[in-house]
Amino acid sequence: MKPLAAFLCRVPPGLWTACAIIAVSPARAQDLTEPTRDPLSIRVEPLLVYLTPGGRIIFPGTTQTSKDIDVEALNLDSPRLSPGIELEASLDRWRLQASTIHFEQNDREAASPVGRPVGDITLSKGDAIVSSLRFDWAQIAVGRTLLDRTVGPEDELNVQLSVAGGVRYYDLSMSVERAAGGRASADPTFLEPIALADARFTYNDRYALRVETSIGYSDFSGTSTQSWSLTLAMAWRLADWADLEGGYRILSFDLDQGEGVSAFEYRGSMAGLYAGLSMRF
Image 1 (cartoon, helix red, strand yellow):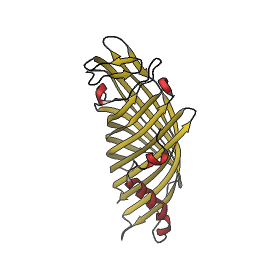
Image 2: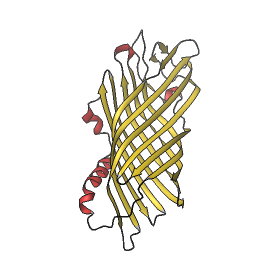
Image 3: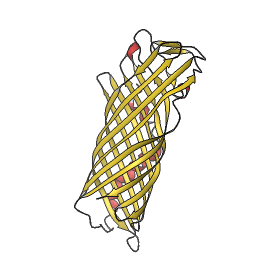
Image 4: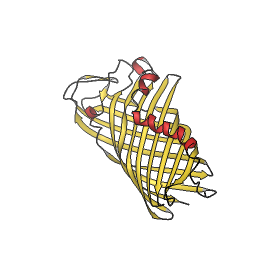
C-alpha cells in the first residue's frame, strides 16, 4: 500500500482548487441574495453509465504468490452500459445523499498475452482463458450547504456550494479460468470513509452545471483503500419536476486485502459518460 501522501499527489490539482473555492466562498457572499428554500426536497435520478474498467489486479492464491495482471490482458476492459441510481433529500441547508452503480461482464474469452502466476494457476502466453468481473459500489453521505445565493442583474444565476461526509462500499467478484484447467477468483468487499465537495450553478432555473468530487481512505484489519472520484454534469430542465442530466464520471481506487500468497489487490478505475433523468418531489 502506498503512503497516503503519495496517493494524494495523484489527485488532479483541479480537485484541490474546487475544495479551496468552497472553503472561501461563504466569506465573499455577504452581498448576494439568498433564495427561498422549500422545507423538504427529494430528488431521485435513475441513470445509465457507459463504464470502462481499467487497472491491474493481483488474485489471491493458496500455493504461490500471484503477480499483477492488466484488466486488458483478461479482456475485461470493454465498456458496458451500467445501471445506477442517485437519491437525495434536502431540508433547509442539510442534505442526505445516496447512490449506487452496478458493472458486470461475464465469460470474456481471450488468449493470455503474458505468462505469469495468477492466483493458483500459472498462465503461459497464448493460453485460452475465460474471465468475468462484477464491480458494485454504493455510497451514502450527509452534507451541509455552505453557500446558496443568486447573483446577476436579474438574479439569474444560482450558486450552491456544499460539503459532506459519509462512507463508500465496494463489492467485487472476479475470476479467470484456463481452458486447460485451473481457476483463480476473488470476492472481496471494502468499506471506507469519504469526504465530498459539490458545486452547482443554475442559470435562469433552466440550465445547470454540477461538479462533485470525493476522496476516501481507510487502513485497518489487513484491509486498506484509497480513492478519489469526479463527476462533471450538465442538466436541462424539462419541467418543474424533472431535469435531463448528462456528463462524465470517474472513480479511481487502490483496494488491498490480505497479505502474502492470499493478498488481493486492485488498483484501477471505472470511468465513462452517463445520462440520467432527475425527478424532484
